[in-house]
Structure formats: C-alpha cells, structure tokens
Length: 277
Image 1 (tube, rainbow, N blue to C red):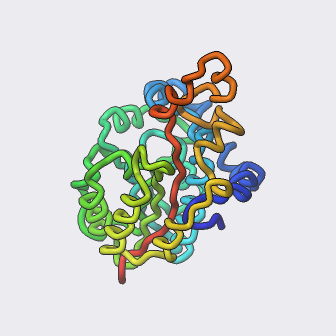
Image 2: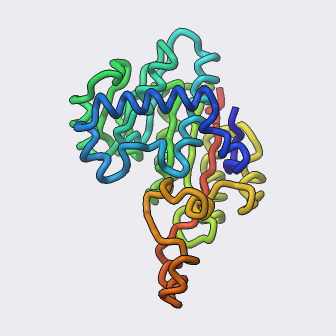
C-alpha cells in the first residue's frame, strides 16, 4: 500500500507502472470516452483528466487502497460519502472495484448534480449525487462506513465545522480517508503550521492511523513530491502552466520576482482517521 503522509518521490515515480494504477487509468479513459460532452463544463473549470494532475495519481490510488481495506472489514456492503466530489470517474471506479459499495457524491456546486444525470456507462448505478454544504450535511448520524475527501479542505476556512460533520455522519469505527494540499513555502493554503492545527481538529474527533504530527514535521523537499518537482520534470502535470525560470531569465532579468507570487509551491498530505467505536 502507498504510505501515509507526504508522497515520497521514489514511490510516486513508480505509480504509473503499478497494475492497479493501470487498471484505474484504463477505467478513467473509458469513462471520459463515454462522457466527453457531459464532462466538458466541469473539465473547463478543473480537469477532465484528473489522473494527469500532479497529485491525483497518488491521491486516487491512496484512497482506492484505503477504501479497499475498509471494505475488507465490512464485507458484503458499505456506504461511502465522497465529500467535495466534483464530477470525475473516481467514485464510479470505486463502485466498480468493490461490488456492494454505494457512493454518495456530495458537492456544493449544483452543476455537478445536474450534469451527473447525463452520465453514461461505465458510470455506475451505485453512485449518486447530492448538492449540499459540507459544513451542514443532509444525512442522518452514523450514515456512512467511510468518508473520503480529496484535496478539498485547503479550499475552505470552515474546516472545523466540516470535520465535525464528517464525524457525525460516520459510523462508530468508520474511516475518514483524507488528503489535502500543504504549502511548502507558506504562501498558500495550507501552510504547515496551519496543517498542524488541522491535525489537531481531526484528533479531537478521530483516532489517526499513524503519528501524523511527526510525519507533517518531517519534510524533505528533495525526496518528496512537490509542484516544484513537477514543474522541473513534467509541467503537464500542473494545472497552471508557467515557463521555467531558467529559460525565461535570459530574456527577462526580473522574471523570478515576477513568478514568485504566482507559482504555488505545494505538496500533499494523506492519511486515515477512525471514529472511535
């Protein structure tokens, strides 16, 4: 299984060659082929090809493995909330991988739910969509065995309320599988100091699967995935395209200062938390 915490580069570079990832990529391709028009509007805002994003190949495989581990503990059937789902292949991939899994996709953008009604195979009928605010979920207590939330919390200031809602709708013993971006230089969301507070909020409701506070502090920019590495090795992985400073500085001596405020130097952090039984 992929490791918790920051993605190590040596493993990250191996991911595209893993059989499970290849299967997921094939499913994603078929999903896009069958739903190109449906995904057009969402893809213009985010991406129709999320596995081409710098962190998603790691995050989606990480979540796949952790959902599989939870499914092994709850054989037969399991309910999952995909919090801040957007409109992607991913929940449909999970439903196809784990027969008996039902996925409720929750997003505050009403266009996601509306577009989902037009999805065609391999979209899975065990996946449904609802428009709602993550800080005020429209589900009874203990409704889900798993909550997954992929790179959402860095986009909101209401993290405490959202985490409390995740705890409310999870069954005792249920798992929260969470990933979030971390700002390496502290210029963007979420700076590491703020990420430490986020871990504290999670610990108030859940039991972590590892010593995440220690892992958050252990950061090696040369050995872990960052957007800086992606810009250097494969800029196509980035959602924002900027020229490499080395190429530009010859023409524009002040280009480094021009780019500093704009380039987001990020990594991501992944973990699993469990609601006390």
